[in-house]
Image (cartoon, rainbow over all chains, first blue to last red; front, side):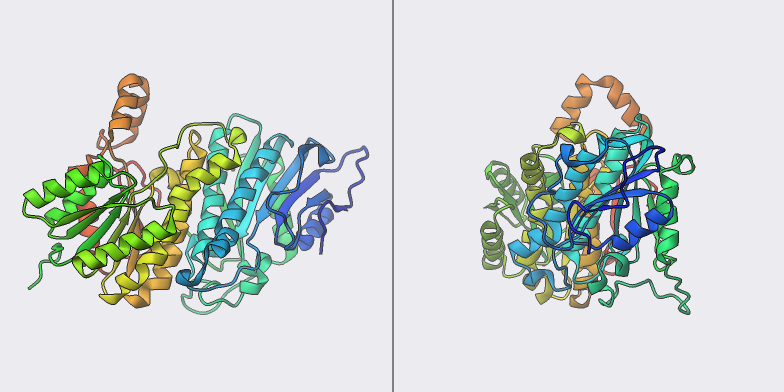
Length: 232
Length: 257
């Protein structure tokens, strides 16, 4: 697991490789950091796999650069588990819904002051919320709050020289404990032709967004799950 | 034979009943035959509206309810059951009045929390408290008020649009969770006039001109004659097989769903 403040392959020396920053909570993105490294990125990670205090513990002056080509933010609930909404207490609701959304706000605020010209700020979330899943209403609300905030940020900062998008991944990528939850996998139509993407194409897509090739995309939702859902 | 759009014998709880959208929805539901429980933090509007509906041979009661307080929400549901004996329709109109345009980078967490409590936390409070009553009759209707800005995002007012977008995720998942109970869960995204929007556009005619041109029907919806009746239809048997959807009621403003 990656610990808060870990730097993976960050050397900070010229000639510059593209710099990526990952702001995350309650999710293991080591696979993605390694994938970005294979695409030549220097990757700095501030996150945890479940031990986050209330706020994102990333102070602006603790970052190692102020010109990241790619800033990823991904905030999941603490120990998400499916269950009826009527069984959730308020503390569980806060953990499932409110805390992840707050961290996205904080991450966007931090990201906009540390993104390089022509860079990309990308939010990551599991794709199930685009379609809804029984037993995960609070988590779904968090994800759609996050995704709409990304759209608003993209609109508000549209005149600035960076892009802001959302990439929805197969749930197993971000919340493996929910991978087998009823209805979370895919919209079942016809034979099972699912083609779950490996680490490499996901890292390649994200790296591409931080280049000129991704500049035309802003405020978009890209579903990078190999075709599990095919929404909207 | 029951008329498909009739709400005769049904009971509705509407939260956030102010003078505009809440009133329009309440009057339309009452006109379709529902008994209506009118809830708001202050009872001035609900009291006057309940009297008006009663004077028109309708059935209504007023309730004081702060939707951010789970105890008050639970008490309100209990009061509806005690007064009318059942609950079939719940419409969450309540939304933060503190919403305003601002740069995203200046949003304080306290402000974020205050506004999300009234929209997203309130939706949780309401869903938790209403489920048993809605399930009891096998034809429950839960309707949330979201916004076109919850679909598209809003460069002006990020908190508002984020809350409204979040509601859509909630609606989709809750619809799947409650489908077996015969409860439909939907959202509307209205473009609705209010005293505030009218005042704003009167003092900002250029903004109105831009917005008006974005609406194919060249006007915002009237809560009483445009929005309320559509909600009444969604609450009726005619919409018994529609669930998990966000229905724009906006004169064609948002067409990208």
